[in-house]
Amino acid sequence: MPPGVTRLLRSVPVQGRLAVVTPRFGDRVVGGAEALSGEIAVGLADRGWEVDVLTTCATDHYTWANELPEGVTRTEGVTVRRFANQHHHTSETGRRAQLKIQAEVLPSLDEQVSWLGWRFTVPGLFDYLLRHGQEYQAVLFAPYLFWTSTVCLPVVADRAISMPCLHDEFYARLDVVAPVLRDPARVWFLSEPEHELAHRLGPLPDAHTVTGAGMDIPTVYDPDGFRRRYGLRRPFLLFAARREPEKGWQLLMEAYAAAIAERDLDVDLVTIGVGDPQIPVALRQRVLDLGLLPPGDRDDAMAAALAYAQPSKMESFSRSVMEAWLAGTPVLAVEGSEVVGWHVRRSGGGLIFSGSSDLGEHLARLVADPDEAKQLAEAGRRYVIDNYSWPVVLDRMEADLAEMAR
Amino acid sequence: MTASPAPEPAAGRRVLVVGSYPPVHTPGMAATFAVVRRLIAAGDDPVVASPRTSAAAYDVAVTGVLAGRRLRQLRAHSGATRLVLCAEPDLPVPVRFPVAGLLRLVQARTIAELARAAGEFESVTLVIAEDLKLPADLLARLRAVAGEVTEPPAAATDSPDGPWPGVTVLGPDERTPAEKAEDLARKVARRVLGPAAPRVRQALVRAAGTVRSR
Image (cartoon, rainbow over all chains, first blue to last red; front, side, top):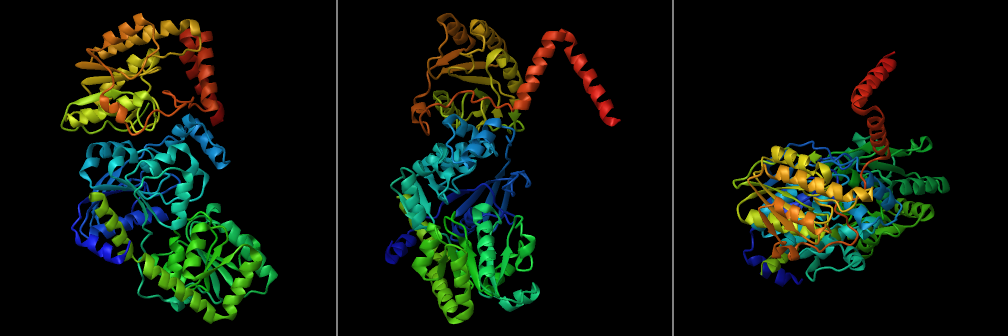
């Protein structure tokens, strides 16, 4: 949408009452889509919208235990309504369906219905939307895969905005998740490749747009202090995400191990985040796990790195890539990730690697030519500021909300 | 029975609605959903019991010969004074039974038990979502359980989604192999030992505990 039109739409007072439905919310929550949902809620509240976050009492996406109390609280200008999960982990049908899905075998529709409630259900949230959904001008659901979206969205389909945060994964092909893309009034995508993927998966409502995701722009970084605090003396490649196979951690560790064996590279691999990194004994001098860091240290880690590695092919936006660029660090992205490849091509802020040989080659190039590394990083930073700073993204979202109100 | 604490009563009268509920997309779900919407619009306070894991407050299969007993438990737990039964094949009256010759007997007993339990509510409405596949005389007895018998509300056709092919009212068997073996062992024990079965079981559990502690 041209900036002039965006400004014009923003001049129309459209602020009203919104709900943001997300399976988890709060400081202790680790997860890109959940963090994004929370930031959208706070960002729109700052702009005058009355925002309710409708969420569960869980913080852990493995157990889905009710760790926080049910009820209503206020934080950062938004009202948070928490509903308790009910657990059905003993469902044999759900377990069997999960195994089939992991093996990329489509369960029957009857089994898929059982699988939907296998991890948890939130009847209180469904009931709340049924009774109060019409009091909201719009209800935003994210991400697509959880009960909070798959089962609750159809209740308020006429005012629902789906922000699916899709990955190209087998789950997205289940029949029971199709309504999350097909039934809402509008769909917001985080990137053009995600938008294209959604078209390949099935029908979409006419009203859908690529809003992107917003990024906070830190004003200060302390890379030297970070290196000192954590005793890092050599240049390092950074990986900051959950250490899980789906995030490409094993792939990166293997490519890195082969790269340092092939070349005499004076570059370590540093990882931050949750999950057991399972570092082989032979690599423990070169692969360093710093665990989950506070946000300030995380930003400093991004600034201190020689390059940031994104080995995950399952991304709908990739916030960590944006954080690296903002911190002035170039990105090495794995080949085959449509979304990260799209960002890298559009921005010119990184290089693509397909295996150990070009990972080693890229690292050697960045060590040998700091000017090239700097140029890549600057292009990436400009790209993020122009396209994904919060004011830019919230303008797009508000313009779409204004259109919805007409 | 899986249930959250009894939902806090809203201002209106508590109404127990028994039927399929999202995401179980059957004709009965469309009817139940429409009934719930209509009750909320009228200022009532519906609470739903559904046989499969769903968005309902209660996962309880009000079907078969235990239907009446489960209905009484739901009434006591929910505090509902009115009942709406959204009927479809298998809910609340089964249309299949492992021993085909006993099906009619089971159906008749189910309806009789339902009638007794329904009598404890101030009012009972039966919504027939589709052909219940019952013999005419049993259908008449089921209709007699309710003070009011209706077709699904018109809004049922505007439900979030139509029926999904292959989705069943009661769902696949949810028991684990261990639970199935335990159920079978319990049935065999009852058959062999008769009324002494619980005492024998307790004695065996005690003996096992003693052996373990040594």
